[in-house]
Image 1 (cartoon, rainbow, N blue to C red):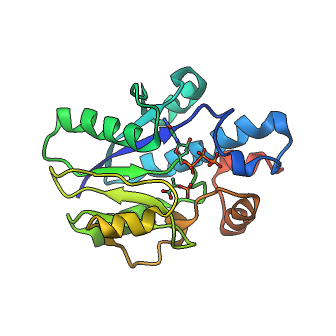
Image 2 (image 1 turned 60 degrees about the vertical axis):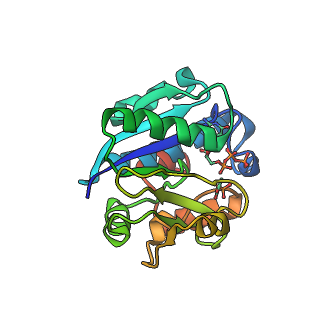
Length: 203
Ligand SMILES: Nc1nc2c(ncn2[C@@H]2O[C@H](COP(=O)(O)OP(=O)(O)OP(=O)(O)O)[C@@H](O)[C@H]2O)c(=O)[nH]1
Ligand SMILES: C=C(OP(=O)(O)O)C(=O)O
């Protein structure tokens, strides 16, 4: 089954504040962009991903990511994470009302296209989500075809997605569950194997 994905991003200077200190302060925006670039490179290499819409707080600040084959739009007037996801989903559905829409985090630098394909296969058209490796957050939420995405991202989102009827996917999906919020998460993904953009920062 094919999917269109929405990926939200703050200005790289403002995002990933819990990760501050993992690299020198002036390299923080570059690290945030590298995490996103590796995530998006894995996503766009996947056979089942049709479109990727990056919903950005500041499109100019993430313009370099367009070369990875993603479309970039500005976030809506309501500047929150879930509003960014809803806006992206609405734009995608305008072009294809019956599609499967997915909400994906931009901080999965170890992502493998195979894990994303396995998640899509397991979801099999149900509204479903992938919890992060800690089990509390969400890295991917998939709609049913033509049905609402209904995103509830934020602290404790795994419980909120379960509560709203989304099916928690059970496959291991290690690369898809390894989001990077803290320096400890960064050490974890480096051990798992990150993409080239993040790897280059640590040579
Ligand atoms: N466009 C947009 N993206 C957002 C917004 N809030 C969060 N994001 C993005 O959504 C993703 C997940 O958010 P978090 O993991 O909470 O990241 P964060 O807010 O950058 O990190 P912390 O500052 O450490 O909480 C990140 O890629 C953020 O850049 C928002 O209001 N608008
Ligand atoms: C916003 C979320 O991400 P994080 O855990 O990366 O803050 C979430 O898991 O819903």
